[in-house]
Length: 556
Ligand code: ATP
Ligand code: MG
Image (tube, rainbow, N blue to C red):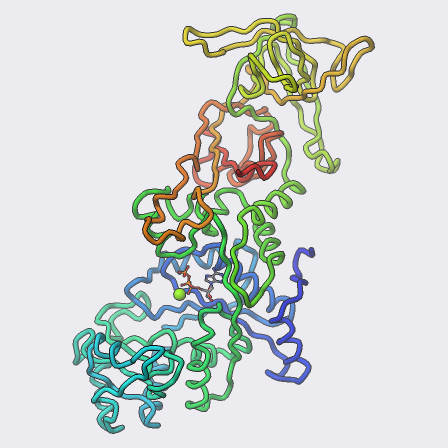
C-alpha cells in the first residue's frame, strides 16, 4: 500500500471517474468533511476523513473542512480546535478551505425567504407534538396543519418576526412545503428553521433562529462548489430533500450526494453522546484516554496515523453496513509499528536474579540491533551486571513439562547475553518468590552453545537491576468485554466496560537505551508488545509507557 495514494478501488471512485470522463464539474473534484463540533473525532470520523481527503489528494482536488455548527446548544470551541488538530495529526490538509456553516447564516436566511416567496415554505405555529402527530407514519399519510396555507405575505412577515426574536423558543417553525403524502417521511414538510434564543459560539447573539441540518447541508455544499458530497448511509433517505432544495432554488451548481456504510467496530461504542457519557462519569480519564476510540485516544495510546490510514484503506468503502473486528485495526497498528519501532528490553513485572558467579562490580556492555531487520537503524548498548531482573511470568516453580523458561534447576538463555542456571529460589513469609539465585556460563555469550552443552530452548528478556531505569507501564486492553455493548437494550452499555482494560505496573524496569525517550515515541518491548511513551505524563523524572498493542492477537 503506498504511503500517499489510496489506490484501493471503490464505488465512489467509479462515480468520480465516470464524471471526469463526461467532463462533469469541469473536471474538478471538491469534497468536504463536515463535522459537528459537539465532541472529539473518533475512528468512524477518521474513516470519513481518509475517504474525503484521500479522494481529494488522489484526484488533485481539494477537501474542505466545514464545521456544521447549526446547533448552538451542543457545540463548543474546544471541539473546533481539537478537530482541526486531529485532522492535521492524521496527515491531511484542507489548504485554507476552512469553513463554518454559521458563516452562511445570512445566505441561508435569504434562501429561506426565497422559498417562502416561491410558495414553498410556511411558518407553522403548531407545537412540536402536533407536528409529529400530523406527519402520519409509514402506513398513514400526513395531514396539513391549519397554518399550511398561509399566504406568502403572511409567511414573510412571520419569518421576519421569528428572526427578530419576537417569538419564544418553540412557538413556531419554518417548514418546507413539499408533500405530506410522500412515502419518504423526510419529504413531509420538514422543519427548516427553528427558534433558539441562545448565543452561538461564533455568531454570538445575532441570531434567534437557526437552520436545520437538512436545510443547511445541501446549501453549504452548493455555496462551496462541492462536487461530491459523501455521507453515511442513514442520509440516503435525506437525499430527495437535498435534491429538492437545490432544484427548487435553482442553484448554480448541484453537488451529488453519495452514501457509504459507516464504520462500526466491535468491542467499541462510537457515538459521541455515549463517549461523552464515559468522560463525564469519569469512567475513562478523558476524551484522550488511551482506551477511547477517539483520534485523541488512539494517538495517546501510540497508534500511528499511517496505521489508521492503512486500516481505513483496507476495510474499503461499501454500501452495506457491517461490523469490523477491532483485531483488524490492531493488526494494522502492529504491522506499521513492526516496521518502524525500535526494540528494547523492559521487564514489566520484575523478579530479581542474582548471578552468583558473576563478578560483583563488573558491567559488561552487550550490543544489540535497534531493529532486527533494519541495520541502518544502528545498534544499542545493553549493560550486563551481577543483578538482573526477569519477568515474573518467565519463572515457574512447578512448571508443566513443555515449559522452556526458567525453573528451579533449569536453564534459560538471557537474550543477547548468557545462559544461566537457577539453583536457589528465595521466598518471603507469604511464600511469594522474591529472588532467584543463578550461575552463568561464560562461554555461552551471544547465542553460543559450547560443545558438550545441551541446547537451551528458552530465551527470555532481562534488564540490569543496577543500570536499568524504573518506569511505569500501563497495560491497556479493550474498553468493553463484549463485542456489541449496545446489543442488549435492557442493559446499560456501561455495564459491559472491561474492568481489566487498564492494569498499571509501577515497578517496571527498562534497559538504559530508553533513558532519553520523548513523549509519543513508540517501541517494541521485546516479547511484550508495542509501547509508547505517554503523551501527557511521560517525562525524564517519571517515565510512563502505554501498551499500544500486544505482539500477537491473543484476545479470547
Ligand atoms: P456520532 O453519531 O458519532 O455523533 P455524527 O455522524 O453525528 O457522529 P458528525 O460530526 O456529524 O458526527 O460527522 C462528521 C462526518 O463524519 C459526517 O460526514 C459523518 O457521516 C461521518 N461519520 C461519523 N461517524 C462515522 C462512522 N462511524 N463511519 C464513517 N463516517 C462517519
Ligand atoms: Mg451528526
